[in-house]
Image (cartoon, rainbow, N blue to C red; front, side, top):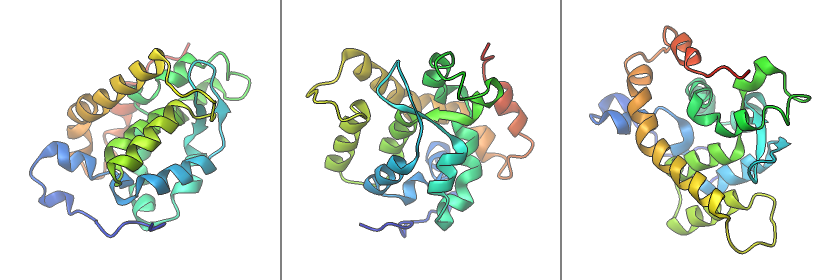
Length: 197
């Protein structure tokens, strides 16, 4: 298994399908799901109470992931995507539980391992068997002895799989694709984050 970037870089400007172009603006496709899983395990976080996951800061994720050219070059897009409301469901739900550890204004810079992992299942490389094993691990992050998921976990994961594979690309493709520099669109993304009060 290759630890660095996979040798599968795409020329996003040559792709005609805007949804496909959107996916390739992020470095997930340059990483195997098993490598992603190993790296995500290295990122320390705050244990969530509402779901079997951890809340991590984008800075701590960056420190672990941005050690390869693909992730270093693509981090700006990753960071902007992970600051959107679609990746804040658990962070918002946990805001009272983590308020002593994360300042209110820093909630936008935190995300759950569960939500990032769901995106990785869709965009990282790997065999169906490896992705299924990672999917199970996402729903059982603490290595409980449970052999099944709760209905709540299944529903959340599958709803997010659908949202990240359809709604997110349709909603944000123009923001990310039409302006490669994204500098003029950063404000519009951050304005869509809900009030955390």
